[in-house]
Image 1 (cartoon, rainbow, N blue to C red):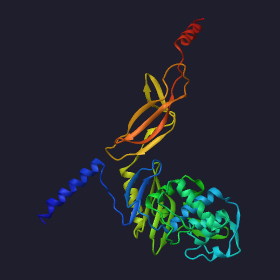
Image 2 (tube, rainbow, N blue to C red):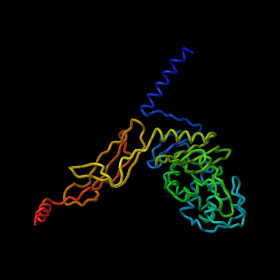
Image 3 (tube, rainbow, N blue to C red):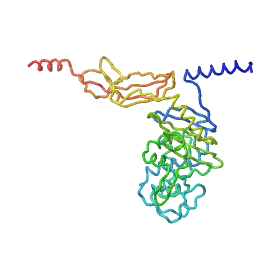
Image 4 (cartoon, rainbow, N blue to C red):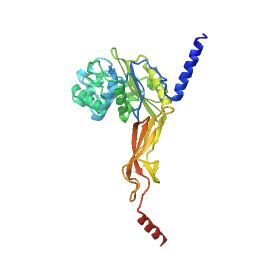
Length: 355
């Protein structure tokens, strides 16, 4: 006991020192692969095997929904094919020949995780499963998902169907910018098209601020989960792959992320960001970045034109570049904050004011 006590005290002091320096990995998860990402900035706040290619099961349906909402019409009537109705796995229990709207199918896709709904959506929006999957892969590349490949719209196991925790976080960031997808994925229970459907995502009830997204499971993939949560205006994305304790792990990831990396506003649209030669420079956009304790952004001003008259207020004059530990993390345009007039014109205006 006496031998262990000094070691424990030393460990506690080490943990405390790391916490104060903002460098500690204060969370661990059971997942084989995981990512915690700040949605607005894309900064990765926690990762484990983030770029390892793995099976992703029904979290695939996030991409299916994104493509369907983009390329389809929610009010369209979809006739369910026999092939769709008899798709194996999780189901919203479609029947061959029945007709329902694309929106109803999307609820069945995201709440019930219906593999049958995924095929029906793909056949309607893509003219067939193969054509729809091509659109899925094209969209994935557009989103920067470089280590992903999709072979079907539902996530059933396939050698050519895989992604990474990092790529799925990128997908979730894009999905959460789609209001229709967020509305559906955040719904706990809905009655639509004669069906009452309940969301499989228990995080919606387990924690405040959860905005959805999607669960998944196959025997080969294990439990997969992609979610989004919001606190104090900051949104974080959590992804866990092959994780038997995913509900608890996501809550732990969010508790860690929101506490250790609160989002800091570095620039606000229309507000003065700096002055140069006495001229106020206004931010042309807003910019935020999550910062751990002890971190600070550095700002450098780069002008692409002289601040000399004549120059109208609101004219773009350069950029503000934000860096963290010497690495650029973002930039915003700079606008001239006041109108500059030539000295002669200014003097004439002064004389006129005395007449």
